[in-house]
Image 1 (cartoon, one colour):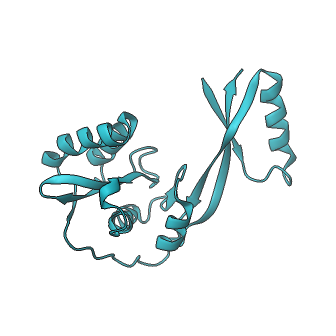
Image 2 (image 1 turned 90 degrees about the vertical axis):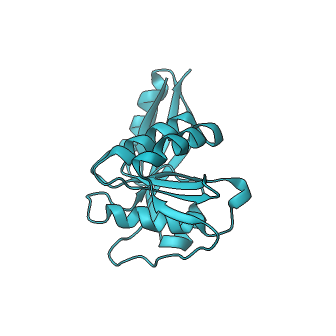
Length: 180
């Protein structure tokens, strides 16, 4: 299985170098790095307008078709995370629909509930570059404003997108390990 060790800056903090050596001595090899970034939520975020789509908070009647679509289009584990967020106290899941079908989604507070982490999110490739991701991201971040870790965007993909849309900055880096 995989294990994760926090990495902030190996060159300036010796205890992380020691952790890497510790795991290497026990048969783990480094696979790569992932990182979390953070969107500052000290001021309201600018709402993003889109046309040609219905953007809404996911309600109970939306869950089954949305989760099925996410599992098929993206990943079954993402459907689990989104389902957990949709059933959570904040119901911090928003989706874009066109002709009654989901085409984009964003979720927050599904993993580590109560902290306010963002993710996962995805947009069908045929509907990209329509500002759907931006609009859904902003709605989710507003939903978790005020939570202890609000604005953390975990294990990010398009870093430049998050920086441009909500001013996200580097927060934490992790090294992924696998037992050899």
